[in-house]
Amino acid sequence: MLAASASLLNVKVVILDVGDHAPAKQIVAPLGPELAHVDGSFADPEKIRELASKVDVLTVEIEHVDATTLEEVRAASQGKQLAVHPSPSTIQIIQDKYRQKQHLASHGLPVSDFVAVESSIESISSVAEKLGLPLMLKSRTMAYDGRGNFVLRDIQQAQQAIDFLGNRPLYAEKWVPFSKEVAVMVVRSANGEVQSYPVVETVHKNNICHLVFAPLRSRDASLSQRARSIAENAIKTFSGAGVFGVEMFLMEDDSIFINEIAPRPHNSGHYTIEACETSQYENHLRAILSLPLGSTALKVPSSVMLNLIGYSSSMDEITKTANVALSIPGASIHLYGKSECRKGRKMGHITIVAESDLQLRTRLRPLLQSLPGSTP
Ligand code: ADP
Ligand code: MG
Image (cartoon, rainbow, N blue to C red; front, top):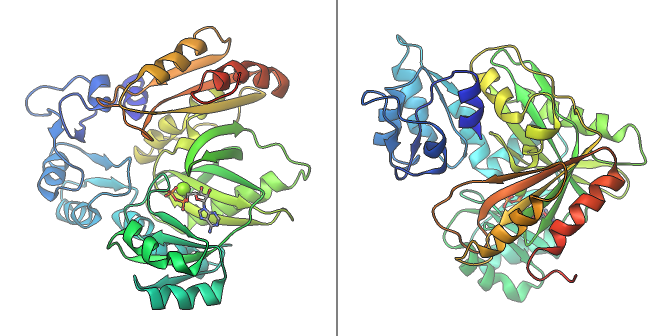
């Protein structure tokens, strides 16, 4: 989606990913032998150096990259002025969720209680005594789509949690009994100017984002403004340009905690492609290229995004839902061209725009009914 946006601005793109048919490489034709796409992993220092040698601006779409090498190529390029966005130090803080929480707390941003924990029954038991049960145990690194989280409901499960989370470093969070999950995309220019998108409601299923409704509806008219300023203030504390996704918990009393931040275009911002004046992808490009930022305003009254998540190794269920979307006014289908479908893997999404929430719900219903396991 970033590559598609770049092509509309005549921005030439070189991609580092595994294989010749990686999704972004299907969008951008290689720019000849000198500027060919790179085949390899974003965690491989050699490949990162190869990519860096071909570009003027380097950006990432995932935080689980080798940030040390990113910093090395940035520092080594002083003469040539290679820009790396967001800055490697920002990625370093964010990719360790415990460091990220410490960073947010030290800047006075609202986060719920969290503590470091060892991978031992004794350490987990003492933290559970302090923060109570249920307790959210999280892997500090390499976590996404809930795969680094374990909900400890009973202290007897401590060994099971250690086995599930493997030998990754851990920390624990107090359980947050939120009423809703909300998110705000924020775009930050290289000189530190920030602009936020509207607040959205995110609905998760099995720890994976399922639906995103934009904008958030609430009784309290000041809520959206409060959530947006918390998100903007959080992003002001980091360096480097680009878009950031700020995931938040909304409590029954309308107070807000930050859950976590993504230093990149984010699933909760996919709706911006059809529903906002400038998509998160175009604004990410504008930010990292030092162009003026585009308007983040909604251009439709109501929108929703449905993630298309694999159910098995077959694409059949995904195709069925996409086919239903073909007959829905205001629906846009995005299939990512990933080579393999797997259970729990994000294979695409559908965004619906509408003139009202009522019309949106009417348009969404047949899509939800087409999902496996839904009762007609
Ligand atoms: P991921 O990197 O997998 O997105 P998150 O930390 O965002 O990990 O957790 C995934 C989901 O788990 C959240 O969207 C939320 O639904 C739930 N969750 C995370 N932390 C807590 C918490 N402290 N209390 C209650 N639920 C939580
Ligand atoms: Mg999350």
